[in-house]
Amino acid sequence: MIIAVDGPTASGKGTIAKRLAEHYGLPHLDTGLLYRAVGRQVAIDGGDANDPDDALAACDFDDALLDDEILRSEEVGGLASRVSVHPRVREALFQRQRAFATQPGGAVLDGRDIGTVIAPEADVKLFITASVTERARRRWLEMIDKHIGDEDDIPLSEIEQDIVRRDARDISRADAPLRAAPDALIIDTTSFDREQAFEVVLEAVENCLK
Ligand code: DC
Image (cartoon, rainbow, N blue to C red):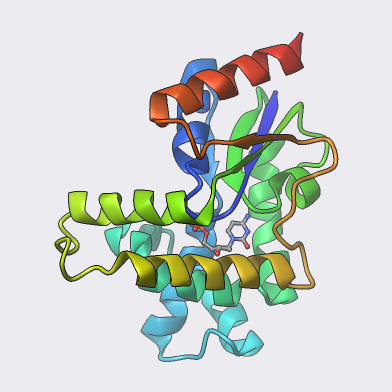
């Protein structure tokens, strides 16, 4: 069984995908991490994330980089969003994601184009979303929780602007833009806490599998 979980940044799709994988005993791939590794590698190489050649060269990153906590930072998220617009980068990362999706027994993948490009045949396609304000609030709480800063030095408005910029780049790129597959279940988690969101998702998945 393949479960595709797509959605914008900070929508909660990663947590939901991880919990679905645990629930169904399936392996999970956070595909955003691959783009983050490319973005980080470009920075290590002293390249420019907007340059398609620099970004393509960075697709050769060492897998050990995937365990580096720095990949989770906002800065690397921005670089990932930049490198992900280049079609040759998407092509370079395609096979790895496709192989993961089609492994025997199935898998859960989360990202932006899983239901549309990586695994259009997925048994379940979810598109997880939430309002910009709520996503910014969640990201803000997460940053405070991880001691990345305190309430006074992380302006919520800046996080909100960053999310709007990232959404715009992910939605408007020509190749595999962020978009719900026509047959995806769209779940808006704005008014749910983590537990409620997972309950709603699980019920939707179970209905879909009936
Ligand atoms: O999910 P995330 O925030 O870790 O993703 C970081 C960036 O990577 C995101 O802004 C766009 C890109 N991405 C993508 O283009 N396709 C995917 N399947 C996953 C992520």
